[in-house]
Length: 173
Image 1 (tube, one colour):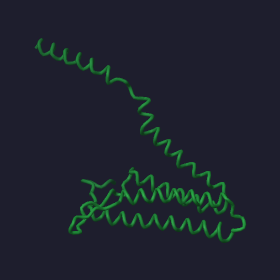
Image 2 (cartoon, rainbow, N blue to C red; image 1 turned 90 degrees about the vertical axis):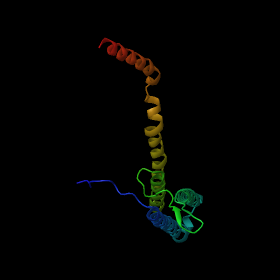
Image 3 (tube, rainbow, N blue to C red; image 1 turned 30 degrees about the horizontal axis):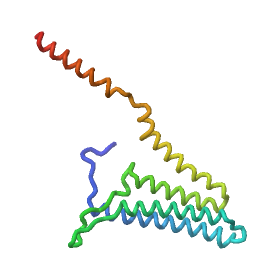
């Protein structure tokens, strides 16, 4: 059963604290995935490390860096002169926000990076990220734009006709 009443809102301090915890959590995921990949592919199996081993490590590091920096910039708090918190930053745990997509990219990259220790073909799963981006672009931007009716131009004369009919009805009565 759904709770009744107004949904509670988060305060600045709560958002600030949750953002700190979220950033710390995703930093540990990033570091853990990189350490596992580095130990397995660059230490244990160092003799079979190729250019592609280093290339995908660089690729994942760039993805991690861009995503984490974006999340950190979104969660940047602001403080007053006296040290009081004036703004806790954007809530990183908000549903359907940009931070949710950045967290998905970090998790996808970490999972693919760790699983690629078993097979390099797992990196093809990373193609899910641009596929999801294209899907969201189509659903939110391109699809509605292509399927939108040009009824705004044809609707204006209809409104004028409707007003005239209303005036005529008023005059009759």
